[in-house]
Image 1 (tube, rainbow, N blue to C red):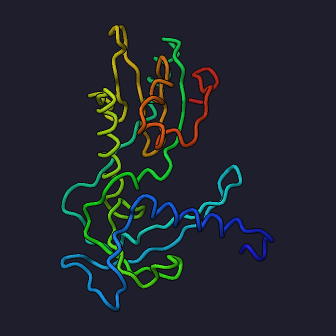
Image 2: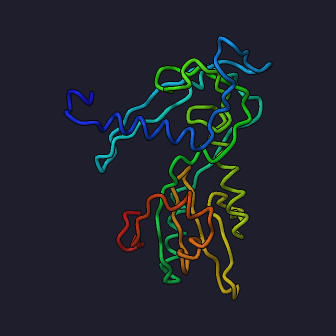
Image 3: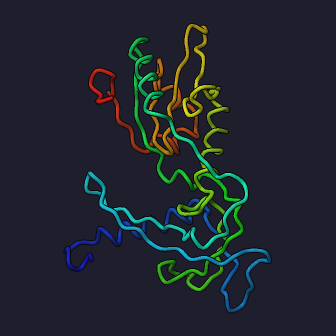
Length: 229
């Protein structure tokens, strides 16, 4: 594809994706499959690549697990998202209290969580130097049946560390009282997309976890008056 386009955009996107997989310790390398055996009780699956061009022209490559090859989980893997009604209420409260409203997306969100599924792959040519190695999947790789649930749990832990609690009526809107207990601040979650209605969203920047993970892309200035909700 790059040869036809006269550039290296897909190659660069591919290198970035595989580099991030190893940066996140997504796999545990057990060595070459000719010399080693997979761990007992683990199932072999495969992965595939998804190619996409983003709205801003960025080229994106994603390694996705073939989750249809895994066993159907006994436990629920349901992961909720904020409703449109809940988001509208949150935006209304933010406008009422004259708060800033920020929207952001968390890059490689699922890879922040560990998986509980016992799976491994045999690395293909795209994995470079580890081709042919047994790679045990350690992180909630995109495409696994339980990855959405694992990410939801992981992010909930981080929000609780920051003093937020889920709303009882709208559990994917998280609330935190101000220091003077005059009102609440809110974070609405739609998988890895967030809307923050807060008095000062920059306060979250002082937490190292939020700096590294959350503010990968940030769009300021979203308001109830200019939105289409």
